[in-house]
Amino acid sequence: MSDVYVVGVDMIKFGRFPEKTVPQIGSEAALMALDDAGLTIQDMQALYCGNLGQANAMVGQRILQEIGQTGISVVNCANACATGATAFREAWMSIKAGVFDCVLAVGVEQMGRGLLGGGGGGEGIPKEGLLGSGTMPAVFAEAGMEHARKYGTTFEQFAKVSVKNHHHSTLNPKAMYQIETPLDTVMNAEMISYPNTKLMCSVNVDGSAAAVLVSEKKAKELGMGRAVKIKASVLASDPYSDRDLVMPDVNAVTRIAAKQAYEMAGIGPEDVDLVELHDCFATAEILHYENLGLCADGEAGRMIDDGEVALGGRVPVNVSGGLLSKGHPLGATGIANIYEVCTHLRGEAGDRQVDGAKVGMTHVIGLGSACGIHILEKVA
Amino acid sequence: MSEQAVSNGPLPVVPYLKGAGTEDPYLEGLKCSACDAIFLGARSTCSKCGARDQLKATRLENKGKLYSYSIVYRSFPGIDVPYISAIVDLDGGGTIKGNLIGIEADPANLSFDMALDVVYGDALGRKDKAGNSYISYFFKPAV
Image 1: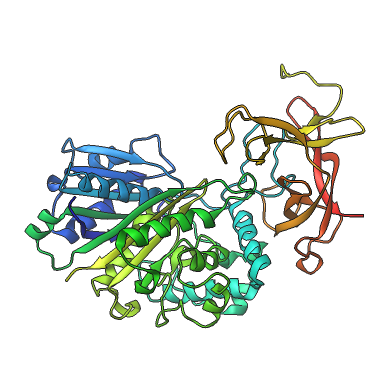
Image 2 (image 1 turned 90 degrees about the vertical axis):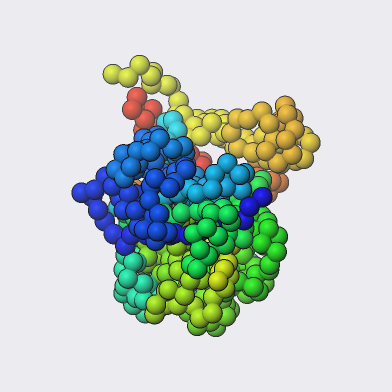
């Protein structure tokens, strides 16, 4: 099986674009990724498109209607917040399988504002606020409080995640926000679901990201100069766990995916130079330090206290600003994370560059649940 | 007018709340005879071990311990906040989620594994389109 390389990747600056259509937003990143690769839509043999909000509306084909209808294979993917990573992985698999040499993956989302989850459904009367809360801030608060229960993690430690990621985003011109948020600002912001304040919740934004994936043969033909090798691509679903019916377990699914990814890449967590992980809420990021093996179980609180996960630390996490400040357009997030890691591996991340980055990891969680992990490696 | 008839007694908020409107409401789980996993709601196959047609109805206990929680300050219009969204491990097995009432919504008042009772009462005045009232379950600090 051929190794697979990213030869073009980009994202638009995340923001709010109510005047545009979903395919228009997706097309922007698609064209940027093609330009980055020095290729055109005529060179693409297939398109893998990730979008959640219009999952039944042929977004991939409509993107081609914007940028070039060449008759190629199009697959539309929806997998909650792992949607973009799933589209990217489908693209990777098509090359691994030897079907194609050169394909495009696009992730795009146009978001509304406000709370996600807890919308109800089912028969009878609404259950929100009656049988607890199904809103995302509450669900991830409960997951964080499980960590507090086990290891004594504090509100302040959770809040520090948000301070860090907002700081990182001041160095990322493509992030939604570039605003410093000191600890007292984060902790005194409106409480949404304890212990998550408003500044500890990811930002609903519109956005898109795209990547051109090629076989080794094609990569050599194009020149390896800025190519990034995909060392591992994994997608896991949630295994049975005792409380899964009322408390989605984002830990077990991540641990399954991480173990497989490290094995596939032939490396360990100590070899990873930077990580973009799924900080949909500040509480979630803490859990994943341990789930991804960046530290031992119970050490995540210390890790944020000691600055090990900040830019300049032992293993910087979410130097893009993360979902908390860069923003979280659900279907685009999984490819935007890959853009961020590739940019560091290429040495093109400017003020936020992780010095000497050779290997990076991306992680997303779609509640329900899906976990997508990619490990990427610098080539040249 | 909806075709759904107004029933005589209050309805259960979830299908696994049994005995709504009686003196003896309780929650019913389905327990897998092969692996002892406990589920809420109808199913025929165990998602833990894959056994088929081994799930038997079992009465869950009305006592449990606080496993995790969040205090919800922002919800949808019309929903009273703050409230405690609690995840509770029931004594004898099974985990359920609901509102913890009868205690101020302040982390200082809450401790993991605190003993809780499952209590039953009107579903905060909520009615369906046909005008039916509902019985819900809640958690209260154990007496």
